[in-house]
Length: 200
Image (tube, rainbow, N blue to C red; front, side, top):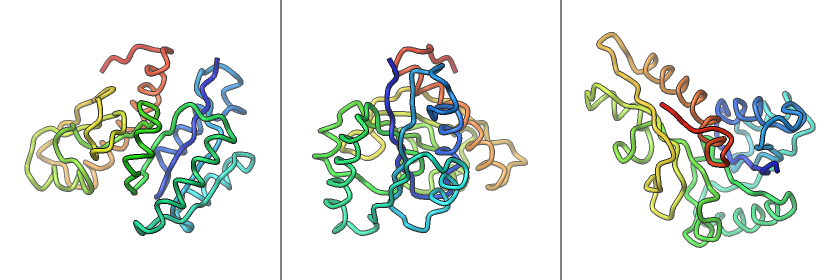
């Protein structure tokens, strides 16, 4: 049985578009157990909104402003309504840059998945790639994990290492990290529902 998934995104949308390309129902023709059925952005002018609407005009895209803490309750109420309407099984965060409330996260325990550009628990929070590069570590990476009320602290689903070479600059490192994100996020999601066993 297919699992209906909704994507939350705030920015450029590279991870969101990668997942849509693999799991949007019209494309996978039932070949995957994952089915992307809607996208929600908290940023009205985020590039991801225009890109999804242009590339997949039949895929529902919802914009619910949430840039200040005072807007979180409204965002979560409307998101909850969408989740119910589309019978959502999993909530996938793809560059979603807001913190959901403890109550919302607890309600959907082990149903919210996030990808983070570091080897958690190292470099939690924002600007993880830049901080890893600036700190001078030799290895960083990507982590897919369940979302819990404590930021970037949920159970790890999978990780993959990215080596920082001597000739890397921040741009080349970011490109390598994003490439790994696009590789492992779909595999990690399929591993959750038993389609595959993740191997790094």
